[in-house]
Image 1 (cartoon, one colour):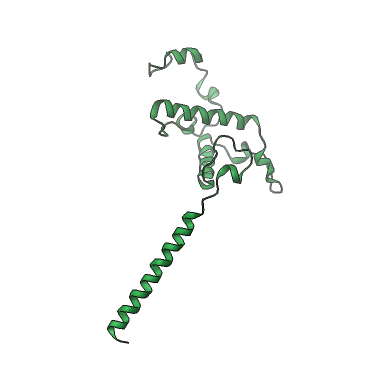
Image 2: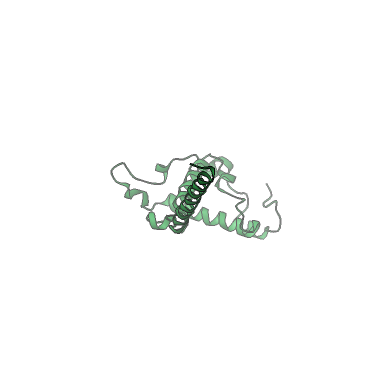
Length: 153
């Protein structure tokens, strides 16, 4: 084979590879990643996020609270429907997610600056036993919104 023919063949193969990889990438981006509330049952707060992000967030909750999946989700190896069952701990978690979202929206332009870890630090859900009861009520805390120090301790 002559040098010109070799260059032409190599260029053709490279072109085919580039076109094929572009087509594969285009097909992959056309297919949307499955989202949380489509794949899982009883998703109420973290709707519409990709499943991989949803699962990573669940792992973050677990690490932040020093808990495992089974502490909130009741299921066994034969019946996974228990993962969707509602319980008081999940209801509290939903309230806490909304609270953290509001704190970030109101104070940090929606940037995720405050998270579960900010307070829990892997020590579990019972902050009262770890930190004590707040010394001022919710009304006092609202009235001190302009004061970054919050309640007097």
